[in-house]
Image (tube, rainbow, N blue to C red; front, top):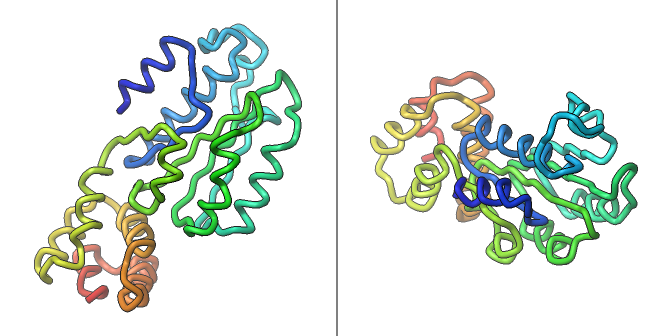
Length: 220
């Protein structure tokens, strides 16, 4: 999928929306890279124009960064209202949205703005996994996957079919607590109602520094 992004950068033609999934560090690097190319006057990150000389993208008033643990209808409405406002500089606005858990209702509320955004408006969305994102949203975005997306995706589809030892082994194989938490957050969006309480308990235990190889015990 990264080859598609490289092609867009090379041709200087960008989609109005991208969904980045998987490894957070790699995805964030790609998002900032794309943002710098889009803002550049020549779409090439020339490092010479006014916009390229802004070292910190967050100092650009047309670069919006949002970090949501839970993204609901209210957040969706506020985002749409901000996207409809005029830009401060050269007509381009970029919305970098980091979302761990997003409701189906919130995603439906974004469909129109993702289908027909104002001219020069771009959405760069990061979620640890694409499996909590509805297909109608994915169809309006270019999906860029990296890192553990494939592994986590397969696991999320089959997690409740695993036996206890398999679940313990899965969590023991995760590299860090944040990765385990992101996995459970995305699992909640697709889990049967009767399992949600146990998944939330697992998230709380991660925050309490329970060893990762024991997290699997808490969600069964």
